[in-house]
Amino acid sequence: MKKRYIATLATALFFTFACLTFAQQVPDDIVVHKACKYCGMDRGVYDFSRMLIEYTDGTSVAFCSLHCASIDLANNIDKSPKTIKVAD
Image 1 (cartoon, rainbow, N blue to C red):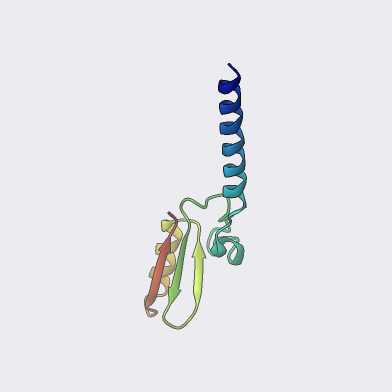
Image 2: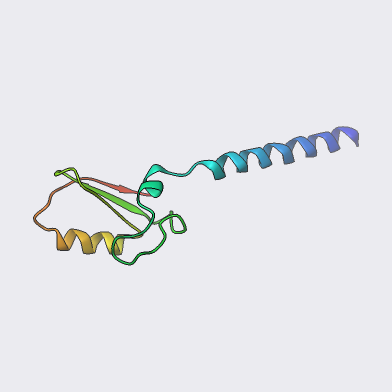
């Protein structure tokens, strides 16, 4: 019984510290670009669908979703994207 209690306590502590470590990791693009350029949505709240486009001229633009990113690509058809980053 005592071994089971210790194992349960150790598991709970492990998951608690693992969750705290995971919660402290904020992606850099969310810190730099906090809101979507087109709709103003908070990119930290919707971090699962966020996108970042870096153009060959050195500019970078952040979006909350594929929808807003496609609007920017359509509006800037004369600019070539260097990288298109999507949340994982």
